[in-house]
Image (cartoon, rainbow, N blue to C red; front, side, top):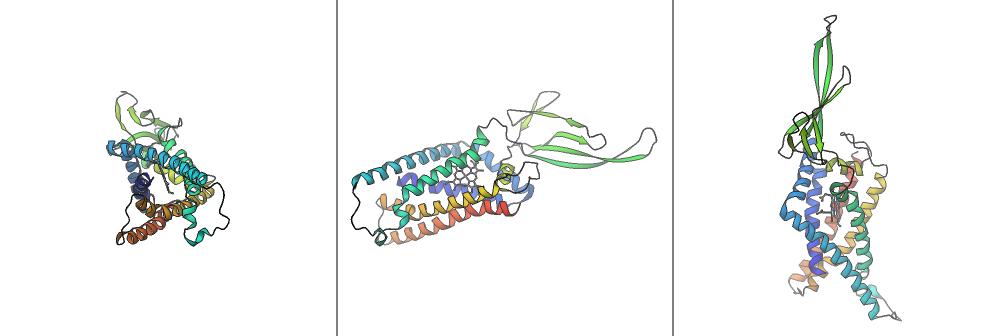
Length: 293
Ligand code: HEM
């Protein structure tokens, strides 16, 4: 439990650093950075192995934790006649299984919100696209009078860093011309030659921003009607995570037999700082996405 717990703490740091890009960088730069990061995370072989180690650690940590709690209960089927647990243990340490189960439920819901949609949903994810409006001028062939109109081009960002034109819409007759077709959600093909032009990024950024946001994103992803509830539940889950880590972090070192008069107080202090700062930063992300609309 200690080893998987500490490995999951490392995962939390990595996941937090990636997610902070959602609030540290704004506009197209932020969107690009986050989508490039998500692509890297799902394509780099070392990260892929780490991801599977994370899923297995979550399962092992949860199952072993429940078994331990059941064993503890069985060891003392009759409650103490006089019990004042607060005298020598924190309430977090006595409720680790309940806190852990709540976090497990959070992770299951959370992965279905993002990870499942990104990897397995039958609804293809939107591609990372931008639009550009170009002013045009022409002449009416009948009268020779100059006419102004604009063309809205849609470009998709490919994983080689190029923006390829996907479609153009003419404001004069509102006709849309489509240049490419997209296969398997990401592979972009030239519509005339059927030659692949490149692979597009999935727009996980817009999905995440829309999930916690109150307004439709610039890219047209509809806002989540229940964004307020989602933000509140995420913040609550981070409070639970904080309590779990408050006891769990230092306890893992204790379980591994690392008990030293000089280092243990430092580990305890670090664990407490970690258990406050990491969940707090995680919670700030959905709150800011909600407030910033
Ligand atoms: C509250 C802020 C959070 C946000 C905005 C967020 C966002 C995301 C997003 C967009 C993904 C899918 C893309 C990816 O794999 O990187 C994801 C995956 C995941 N998240 Fe979170 N997350 C948050 C907090 C957490 C917390 C606190 C935990 C654990 C307790 C967690 C556990 C996971 C796991 C296990 C995955 C799958 C990772 C993988 O495939 O390797 N997330 N999250």
